[in-house]
Length: 134
Ligand code: THU
Image (cartoon, rainbow, N blue to C red; front, top):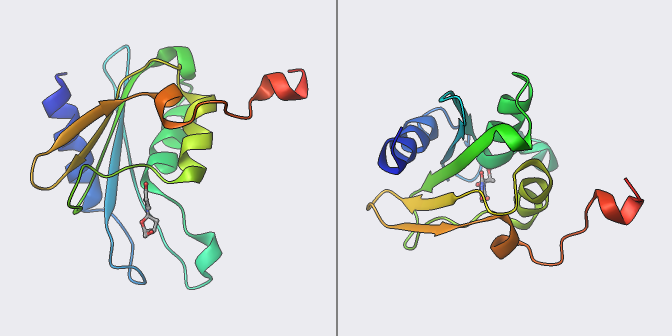
């Protein structure tokens, strides 16, 4: 699967967003090294703190199908933003633990702008299992 195809999957996932409170739809897609794609979208709740982001949903989706960080090739996300949509702080923390440090992350928007990054760039000096001696 190409980078463009993965970004299209994230755009498709965005349509599954349940975001009646923010009206801000986000989609994400995780590509595994064996070619599978797991989607995620942001799912909100009237108890606002229960809201879950697209990126975490996609990563948890992959993990719930038995995939681990070593198996994940890339992550794409997409939203209707001016610049390519950037993961929130909570997602950066989760990405830093559930993806390899240099696996590509494609941030994108509906206009087709794309910026490539990775877990280390998004969250340098991350708190990690090492800090817990794990
Ligand atoms: N959101 C995501 O799904 N991913 C991000 O990286 C940024 C924010 C969601 C959370 C909430 O449902 C909505 O976008 C507005 O913050």
